[in-house]
Length: 595
Image 1 (cartoon, rainbow, N blue to C red):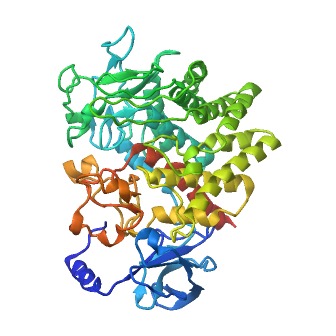
Image 2 (cartoon, rainbow, N blue to C red):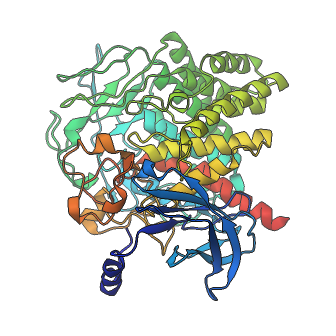
Image 3 (cartoon, rainbow, N blue to C red):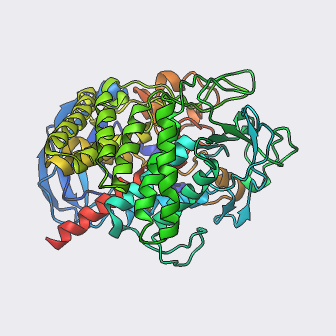
């Protein structure tokens, strides 16, 4: 949470005796292209009929609205109401008041998300492996040594680059490929929303390439090293032996068998069950990994044609070869563990095949074969499973959104467009149905990385609206957006240090916060976790010292506490997943101004 002065803490403590209600708003503000709703929660039975929206400067009431009762018990509250004020469109600063209870100030304005798509790139650059522009240091220069290969185990291979997954320093193809694709998709959709202020190495200075493509290329270059030949792919660098405490990457001295800091294992993709230690994963094939390679290479070949034709050309054959490998060995490929039986356990792969096929069609638009193949795969998984069931194991249904459906609707026939719009709408319907009477209208499951699920839903909501013009789900879209920016039980945004001047995570589970009291600007934290899961974990709560304790009695909990790696850790792939949606909000604001 944002740091308070001693006086403010004292006043807050005194007020807490009588404060039984809290008004939650989107702390960055409200854009006029989406519905505007705040939420009031109370830990005592409270009747609310109306609410006032007041000008922040004068206190003048400019709008009076009707409160809509909802089920506060979901969040351990006695009462809860939604407070809609969409009709108020005048740009300015406001607060909401109900009796003696008032909200934080917030803005209404069409420029409040200006440049927001560039914000996540600060954290992405901080996560770079190989050379890190944040520290100015090189790390993991001895990566790595092949493991689990039938003939090449122990052989050195240069796989430097990419990103560290989170506070740990492992690197995974599944999250890195998805992050790379997500950033390229953001540029594909909103090319005029991205700036050029950093060079290819991530240092300040223009280089004639939008920064988001510099970051995506950092991922693509690493993926090329991890895929040195047509059917030779690697999935992961390091394993859970990495979990030995907080240290900066360039000081990493973990010994994987080649000497302290002298190289990490690089796991070969076999398609079979793997694990070089006691514990094994549950691989069923290679398609989920190989198709991720294919989709990223294919879209990269399209986008980099303008900036570096030779680089773009180099990815075309790799995309086709990767897809052939995926089709030869269908099935899902997991992460690998060593000390403990925990790993990324992706179970679906059909969505990856669909996305790869439609990306190959974008690369070769004259080739109808890829469009037909994409349609074939798309029909086999019409709805992303977590959207339909509300259930998932750790990263079981990954990525959290299938933009292949959108691209098929965009590129296909009228019949295909209607079909994939229907699939997308049905997935959203299930999320809405789960929201039910939740005052925050948030039907996303609170599994680990729930904020990633939220941005997956936001992406699908916005793409569905673009395709159909259907306004049915706009309130849910606004609610999920507002949730990220503070309209949630804890009244905090879910992005480190963004926006400035409001309640944001200040004690995230992040390396540089502890090693150099550094900024973690732009990192999306994991997000709230089911209370039933969190309560069974050791050391992730501050107990009675938790300033958010009054709000920890609902279905899910969140702690702004370094020790809580389950709700308060920024992740690289989750952060990358924000770039499309936030750049779209930036573009929407500009479109409103033009009108």
